[in-house]
Image (tube, rainbow, N blue to C red):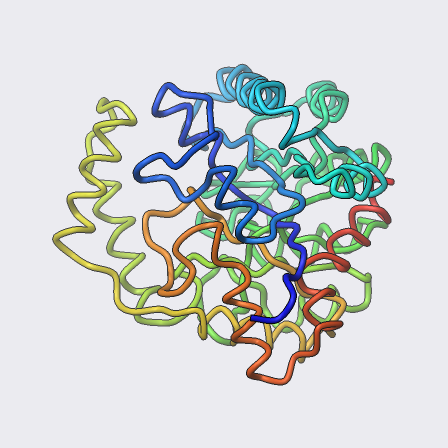
Length: 356
């Protein structure tokens, strides 16, 4: 294998997995998890956006409490491993931390429901170190339409426009993963910052509403933005997309009164009885090449979504495998300079241009 390419990954859901397990340590391998410190280092990860996710079915005021608890969980993880992790909020901090041999840890809040329709809460999240807000998750907020819900406000409401403007003012990235295409365009009409997608793939290759259409990719190019391509199979090929739709229907049939651990057990049982169709590292590489071809080599990044999905492509089974993706791209004549753009430079530039 050629020299390791440094990685900054846009989205990892380990904090929620740890919450569900009642644990807060990643020193060594834990069964069923995609992420721990040894495997992060094996994969060449120098910086990670940790998702401080709260399910979108959570009542908004309760979601605000939970997102604060998730932020606290990440802070405690970092405090527990000062020789391996350090919190970062700017591009300069990411570079300084990575030069010390530690992994720069950034925070991204997944789902605008966690701000409880309050710009004051948004400002407070910023002060606690959060550097992106995904405007929606799987359901609409009162002010923004999700890709996987029925349209309600036609993209962004007037308050949604205020949210994007406040994100710009603060120096916080408006993450457009999970939002409807109309919301993508509405946010880009307002935003003065580069377009940012923390974990999305290309809709031209897989017609999932979570993926980025080509007309939006051209705006990513024009704003100097980045699409951090995800590894989740539902967004990679049509067979997996259709299987993912069946999984969602099965999940919706699980009674709401069941707790999260019972939900996850039943989810795993369904997957075991109904295996996902094949996907591989080649599918991910195809999406990266499409983003590059439409938006340019400076517009593509990596948002694996490890520990946020029950299934992953062959060859990308955990955070140790990023270098295998680079090897696949080398077979497609990507240069080391191209791979450096993908793995590190592009996202660091967007972080610097938006957050400092």
